[in-house]
Image (cartoon, rainbow, N blue to C red):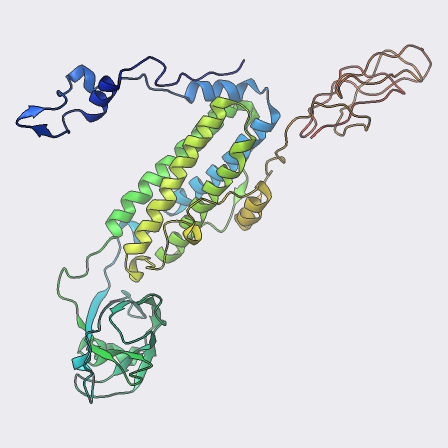
Length: 448
């Protein structure tokens, strides 16, 4: 039986009543008179009954009436198990629970600091640096504006303020005025970094020796805030969601749920690796659901899958937003976009595309069967996976034309050759073969 969902606006609601429910007391007043009266406590409650899809979803999945929908649910379960295992593996890593603050440094770059000759320019840049706790790496984030042209280089030099020195490090060429990354530190430079013995300079085509410059100094307390505690909260919430999705799908599928595979390569030893994997998994998950939604036939399953996809999209957006504003030392990347490749419509991926992307993380186990729609047409080619069994009605030359590609009619002439067939299992993408099939007849085509 088809699950029907009540439309929340099924009951007639006047325009004024609907505005009252939506607006509450938030609308402005004119001459002290409220345009729309405030809502009572009863009116503040949801005026429409909540549509809970959980029971309908479980009932539809456990009915097992549509093999294609069940295959899609098992495919979704594989993805949710992968994500849940990833977060369960890494959510308690020290870089999330107790990050060790590194030494923070900063530099303000202007033309008047350029040496030996200053440059008259309104260009300015702010450089932020974080030294790793073990003092082997230096994360940087340099943002410039007002340059005479595109920056041709950003470099760190050994030298005190007002002097010129030798190039110590070359940073990434900026994109849209932003340069981020990490460099390996030479132990010999640690003392200079700690004592204002290194400066940063940005060169342009008009000023190849440097257009703006600034001395690297210790960042004043509080000037460079940390975002890691916020990330921990985000990760904990995502982890709870992924585990809840696994539980929901397993309960709904019941005995139809496929066994969980063994996963691999999910340990992320650094914050940068964790965020890269997390973002990739969430992006893949959203595109995977979007690729399957048009194939789902049961409305309750379709609505629930859409609800899960919406939450996965929030995960992806949250992680991408964090990376866009966080420092490089905290896993940030200012070039991160809110969607894949700045898309205004999320991409949909096929099952094969998704399985190819996640295959490196599956060590062993059964992956879901291909998702196809059950056939309903006529055919003459025998299907596959038809099962085995013994037929009690022997015969030869018994069959006639099958009806609509599903059930063949019973033969007429009895013989001596026993037929084969019997109660088989459902062929992938097809329908169940009949319990008894006459020998010598035409069997139905497996439809896809």
